[in-house]
Length: 350
Ligand code: F6P
Image 1 (cartoon, rainbow, N blue to C red):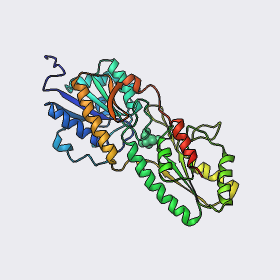
Image 2: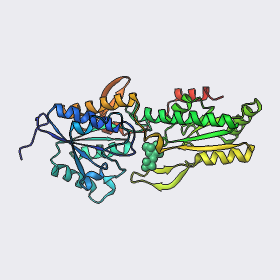
Image 3: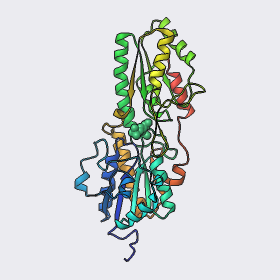
Image 4: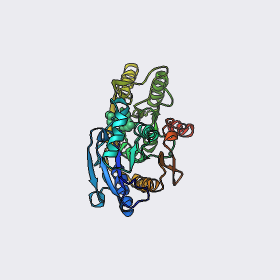
């Protein structure tokens, strides 16, 4: 078969979503299909993330299929946490099926796990471009990931309500918030909702300090306290709370720190306390305008990287500009909350 050059008009490209879903994924797909069709290319949706290239599961995408999806949550492509490196001949099977499907290039939309697989497959010859995605906002090589702003918006709305009912009952309310081991969602939603105390994974907490903080509030008549706590937060010199289950990328399923903290506070103060876990529901909502715009910009730019033959790269946001960075670099390290924002979370604690 005559090998097509990347600038041939009749290219066929694939797009897949991997890892946890979040708001904005469909807006990326919509932008990719729109831009690709402008170049006369065909777009094949790969369903269920990398699994869709192990057990071939695809869907043809045209603009009429996606044109009204910019404001929808979730992903029409479905996603998974499938790791080809953990399957017998996984990487080889993916490369073989890409060839069988006649895909000239692939766009992988995901977080550090999905893009780590993309970097590995690029080294094995796969023509792939990455788009950074996660509600956790913990990718080091982009200033923001889409999905984050939408998760913060949902979490802030829920914490506002928790604060209201806590005030009505003079209760301590704890919101345990998704975000894995970086506290971006907890920091932003805690600040935005006017939480009284924000606890992040970046700074393990001391039980005595938390209890004394709450007691001091009570002594000055502030009986209701709103605490926002990241799911990956830990007590000093202790490990994260998890459910003991691990996914194919080795991530433990976090959760439980909120109930633990509530139990400890209740034991030491006898104060009335309730816990809410803001988990999947804060990433399953509609994308905010910010995320719709960022997702659209990422999707358009990813197709242009394919057009320019810039594989092994990931689109990224630096300041207000879209640029690109190597997949290798993009998955090098996790981005945790910076000291300046940590300081803000303390300045607003009262
Ligand atoms: O990485 C995104 C995320 O939503 C994390 O915030 C959370 O800890 C994890 O995914 C939950 O994973 P799952 O969707 O597999 O339960």
